Length: 125
Image 1: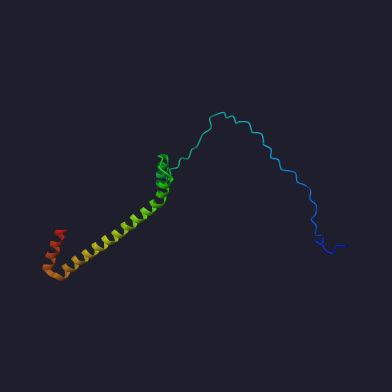
Image 2: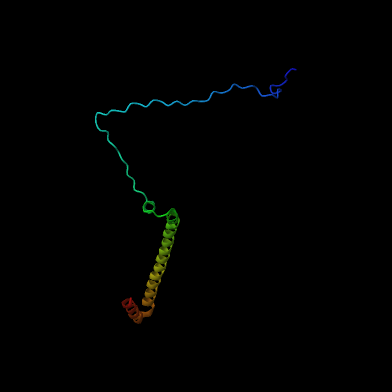
C-alpha cells in the first residue's frame, strides 16, 4: 500500500526510551581568605507603624484574629476619624465666616448702635 500523505499511517511511531535526568551536586568552592576584615554594610529599615504594632502584638502572644482585626479596622478607624475631623473643620470655618459677616453687616448698617452692638458681641466672645 502506498502512502499518499505523511499522516496516512494511524499507528504511532516507536520512541526511544528517555534516560532519567540525574542531578549531580557541584563541589563547594573553597572559602575566601581576606587580608583584612571585610566591611559589612547593613541596611536597617524601620517598619511602618501599623506593622510594628502587629509584630509587637504577635510577639506578645496575641492571637492572629486580633492582629487581623487590627489590620482591617486600624485603617478604617483612621479614615473615620480623619473624615470627622475634616467635617468639623469645615463647620468651624463656616461658623467663623458667618460670624465675621454678621459683625461686618451690623457695623456697616447699624451706625453707632450697630458699632456698640458689635463691640458688645466681641466682648462676650
